[in-house]
Length: 415
DNA sequence: TCTGGGGTCCTAGGACCC
DNA sequence: TCTGGGGTCCTAGGACCC
Image 1 (tube, rainbow, N blue to C red):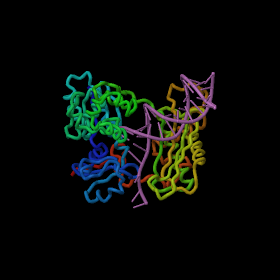
Image 2 (image 1 turned 90 degrees about the vertical axis):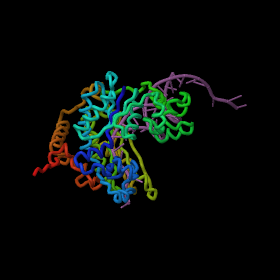
Image 3 (image 1 turned 90 degrees about the horizontal axis):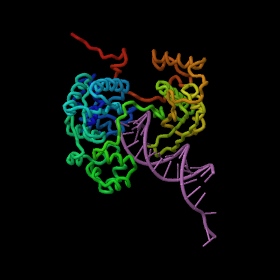
Image 4 (image 1 turned 45 degrees about the horizontal axis):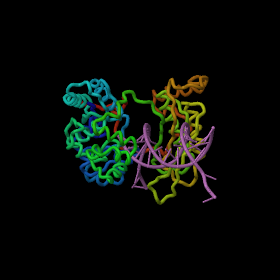
């Protein structure tokens, strides 16, 4: 049996742990730039705030409903996630951390998986303060489906077998893991409306509508394991660092600053993973929602003959690519840097003699990393990254990093 | 005025080769 | 009149996930 442990309204639950007064009250968490609602408490869902709604569109609704609104505090959520994973690890011989708020557990060797699920759920709740739901099924797809139903029915833990026609038929086809809005629409045209319809559809029909991915989903719904557990996270193939700007950006100078920051951030990320990039891409775009303004988007890719993780090299090449695609006269909304085709650790075959971490350049970069690790990212940075960064993102409603910053620890008063 | 960020996989089609 | 067949590699774009 496979279990999917999924945190309830994860970001909201994290905020509630440190502000219990938010319990039973409507809460939403906004995306970067305070743009969209990316997490909603049940109360906020009941008020009719849709997932992904632009904040400016639901602002009035939030005011009327007394909704507490927060910026995303990824440092807090990341740390809470690590705590939950460490609790789950005690129970599962085999486990896959699937996302910041979900993990698959292989409970094949467990005699009573249902009873164990309740135990897991209680311990995670007691030890971290985060409520979770657990779905059980013979395959990942059915565990996902069970989890969805567990949340819908407020059941805590729930098991769904492939033969459970009633449960399957109560799940819309777009709610099945791997089927989105578009595939859903195509399936509906062939008379497949819910998970049961899909499970019972002939393979030929399924294959005609979708690709091998849909075929896998189809079999998984029937109880046939096609998607395995990935215990060890696979190293990334690409890394992207990008942001929307707080305000429209027109000047090349500002774009250069932004791109320099993304380049350094992306380089830093692959260095941490011990990877090197074989390719580099820079992209820029205007605001696609502003139909009244002229639109422009472009990207430029270059191969890196010698794979690299050197932030200075990545930064200077990014700037060259940006200058190639920059066009005057547009209001840019977003830019980004991608490091492509990453090679990992022992995988490198050629370029044995490339200076790596040695020499002046290597020592400089390492020193910068040590300084920023100890004193924060503003303690040492490249001039190209800019000083005032007026374009940088908006986070007006950020809560403290309660668990990862000494200065932001919650204060407890005892009288 | 205000609309996220970071990934993966699959397929179709073009370029190129013999 | 009449324009092959079979393969690989690469990339862009679509679809999905959280």
